[in-house]
Length: 250
Image 1 (cartoon, rainbow, N blue to C red):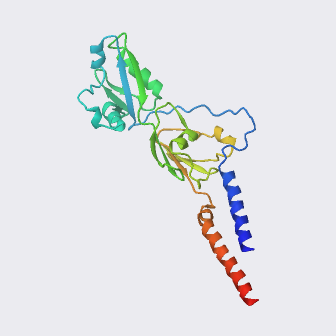
Image 2 (image 1 turned 120 degrees about the horizontal axis):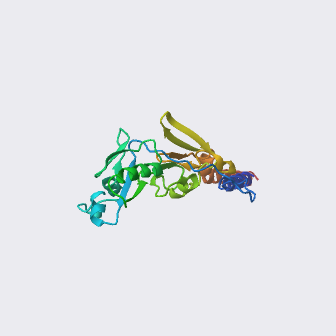
Image 3 (image 1 turned 180 degrees about the horizontal axis):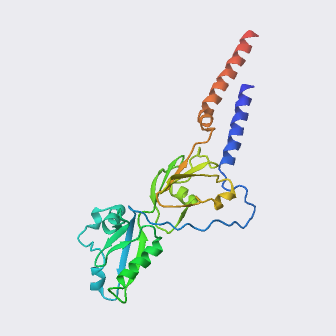
């Protein structure tokens, strides 16, 4: 009897586990609309790539960081970004060759590009400016297969893409209550996301911003699931002992 009970408990645990593995389980061929992608506004400490291109190669080198003295083999990609990038200062500006200080804090990346372009136009008539953010990093921790801090090389990143970078949920990750921490000027803002629900597409935290932290909490049944094999063995021992005792009594 005890063995049967153990098998039933394991089966129920398996059924619950399968339910926990589903994303947006309530989707029924719907056309789903999400919020517009947020436009991140630059803050002091952000790292930018700023490149100025002209038809003259010598002029182009003059307006860009000269990294030829650095050995690319001795630097990681993150270190190269730091060496060749421009840090937004505490005053909210980036200091560029020739053009000097350009205020960018509070601007989107596209607005910062326009601001640098306007400065460069004072010196050159044929220049093209490109600005990218190099410090778009998110941290994913908790019940994922590869917790860590990941760099995003696109203009946006959603919660599913961030989890994919971290190898997806572990077997015990809770999909219905994912926590997102977002630093703001007023403090750290928190969001709870239910990835079983299609409504996640309308959450302000569906698209992540630089420096967001995603925390995947463990399922409530994690302890039981981890101990289920031991429970099964224990119940099997009890069942065997009862059968032996009954045999000896007879």
